[in-house]
Image 1 (cartoon, rainbow, N blue to C red):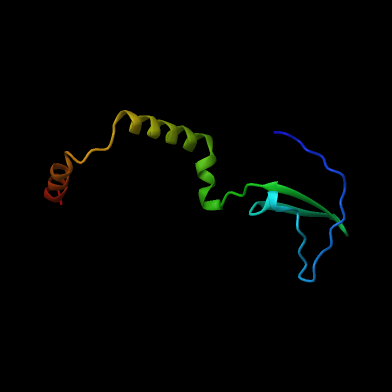
Image 2 (cartoon, rainbow, N blue to C red):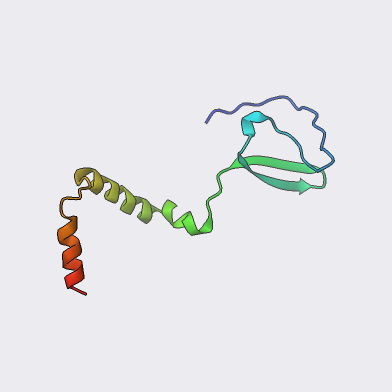
Length: 92
C-alpha cells in the first residue's frame, strides 16, 4: 500500500458540523476517533456487517473457493431439470 503524506491544511467545519476531506475520499467509510478534546484521528476503513462476517473466516473462504472451483468444472445446464423436478415431486 502506497503511503502519501501531505502537509497540514486548514479546513473549516461548516454550520452543519461537516468537514470535506476531498473528492478522492467521496463515498468511503471512515473511522473517527477523538483522541482528546479537539484532536481527531480519521482513518479510511472497510466495514463488514455482522451478518456477513462469517464469509471472511478461513473455513468459509476455503469452502467458497472449493465451491467456485467445482462450479467451473461443472457448468450449469437445464438438460436434467425436468427429471430432477419429477423425482422431487415423487418423493414428497
